Length: 300
Ligand code: NDP
Image (cartoon, rainbow, N blue to C red; front, side):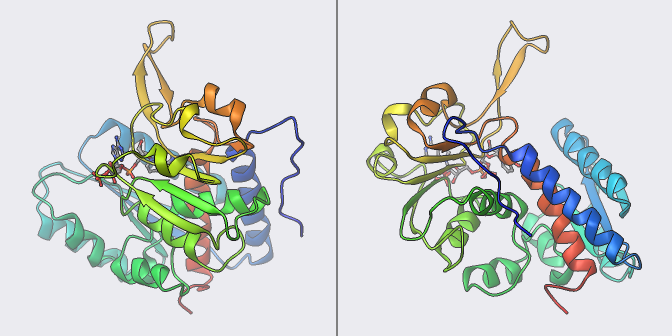
């Protein structure tokens, strides 16, 4: 099957919504073929963070659309770490659950690393457990964090020439920056790049981005990457999700990425919009990872 998206020279947009829909339809086809498989996903939400609530609802909705078994466990902001770990252990031992996701951030009294490590790495569909992070780094089969996995999928399906190219990642978080840098470094289709990772201590980021063939912006700073920081023909992947005040919008704000989209569009050869670029891919890859877990493809 040809998974690649046809692009024409007029259209520079990497359409994450379209690719995500394609992945969801591929999952539906697989589920039809293996009708004895019912992937199960446990979503743990601690506290009342409005953004986390929205993300969990979106994931729950996608599970329902695909006919996955899903549990949403809403826990009090005041929960102790020991209590939270007990919930996770119960899902580790539940045969109907193939994936466990703890929506971050967690309240202050809870040590995030203890929580992520408590998840059975074979059910770690978010790819945050140190076993999966380590296996990703050495190029072994693993659950790959969903946002970086989605970016890789976009590069592959748009047939972006990546081998030997200069890729600059802006941001070094464990969720996006470091894992996407590790993926781009692997000898794989949609990767095999020369990778530079920049962050808040990097002097002049434009010294690096001006030479980049591919830029992944993941810093959470509205429209940080300007057109004068990129070269003609660069491929720009914008991970950022930032709210900026805008009284002309009914909600009083609009959502923008980490890239000055309008200006960079003119110079880029391909670019992801915000919204509609990387965002939709994240949930699609979560569904894919959960299916892979139910099918025991990563850890047989
Ligand atoms: P973090 O806040 O965890 O990390 C931000 C990184 O950016 C850090 O490494 C930080 O550097 C670096 N940074 C911050 N400001 C600057 C600056 N001015 N110059 C250079 N580097 C800077 O963020 P995440 O990685 O979790 O997320 C990044 C963005 O992506 C956010 O907008 C987030 O909402 C979005 N996001 C989107 C997802 C999606 O599905 N589309 C999924 C996940 C995140 P240092 O390490 O030195 O502090």
